[in-house]
Image (tube, rainbow, N blue to C red; front, side):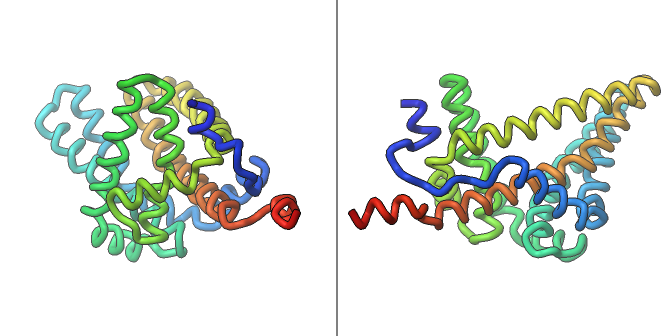
Length: 239
C-alpha cells in the first residue's frame, strides 16, 4: 500500500523533533556559516545565470557555453556545500574535497534522478515516495562514504517509517521557497527581464545553502531517531 511505503505503522519508532526545532536548528547552522556557504554558491550561479541571460538575448554560443560550465559548477557547489555543512570546511577545502568525490557523487545523482523520474512517469505518487526516500542519499554519501546503489538503499532504509513526517517537513520548506521566489520575482520585475534574472540568481545563491542545511539537519534527526528505541517499546518488549 502507498501509505505503508510512506510510513510503516506496524513498527514503533522514536518521533522526529517538531518542525519548529528543525527550522530553528537550520537557521542557526545557516547563519553561523553564512559567509562560507554564500562563497561556495556565488560563482557557479553567477555563471549559469549569465549564460541563461545571454541565451535570452540571442547570444546562443557564449550563452550555452556559460550555461554548461555553470551547471557543472552548480552540481560541484552542491557537493561542496555538503562538505562544508558536515564539518565546517571553508570554501577552498570544501571544493577540494568536492572535486575529489565529483564522479562518484555524479553517479548517485544520476541514479537518484533516474529512479525518481521513473516513479513520476509511472504515477505521481510513486515519484513522491522515491523523492522522499532518497533525499538523504547525498548526505549518506558524504557522511558515511556509501556510493552507488548502496547509498540509495541506505537512504531508503533511513527514511522508511518516517515518510510522512519527512514529506510534511519538506512541504513546509517548499512553501517557503515558493514565497521567496514570488517575492524575488516581484522585486526583480521592477528592473524588467534583466532585473528578474538577477533577482532569481541572488535568490539561488542565498537559498540553496539554506535548503542544504535544512536537509542535513533533517537527515541527522532521522538518523538519530532511527537509532533511538522509544521507552514504550522497551516496556512492551519486557512484557
